[in-house]
Image 1 (cartoon, rainbow, N blue to C red):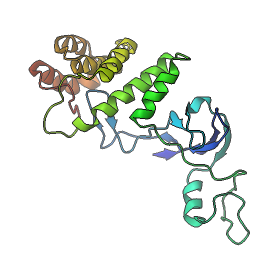
Image 2 (image 1 turned 45 degrees about the vertical axis):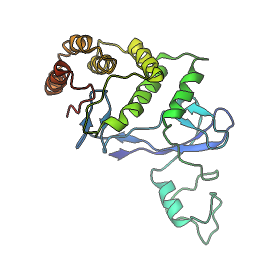
Image 3 (image 1 turned 90 degrees about the horizontal axis):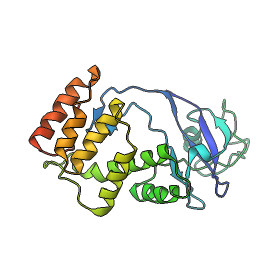
Length: 234
């Protein structure tokens, strides 16, 4: 992966700072794609899009948080290793880092991804200012979190039954665009998770992208056998 500079942001609620790491490029070597669209890819960046402020505890979107400063990638890791006893950038001459520009404000915490509870909280807050893309992002990650226990289970996942997960799946389905390969795959997975295997097969049949031929075949076989809807496609 090719790293990009870290960015320091201000919480839009209280102004407290946090930094986000990101990468300019990555690759899908050693990746694993699941039928719910989840991609396990150690060499592909999953930059934080929505997070929780460590100060006021409110959730916020990184896009809404002003960028205060850009810092060379790796500065914070190097700083924490060499200055663990200090929590600000006002380093003494004795302990000053060499060959690194010193940011002008205290060392902020690193942005972290929300857990399932945090995504649910952010989804409720989004109702006050609806945003289709953000809603789809949250609902997809809520679904992924629900599916995690089944990914390496010996038994296949059974159709979703709990009310909260059902409501989330129906909400996600309404947002998906079946004009794209990703939208078709996610729609098929969500329909199968609802026990609608026939509808899932019909949607998946529309996936014509040459790069997905083996994945489509593997998923279709599982859907025809109704063996479960969470399938490792590659």
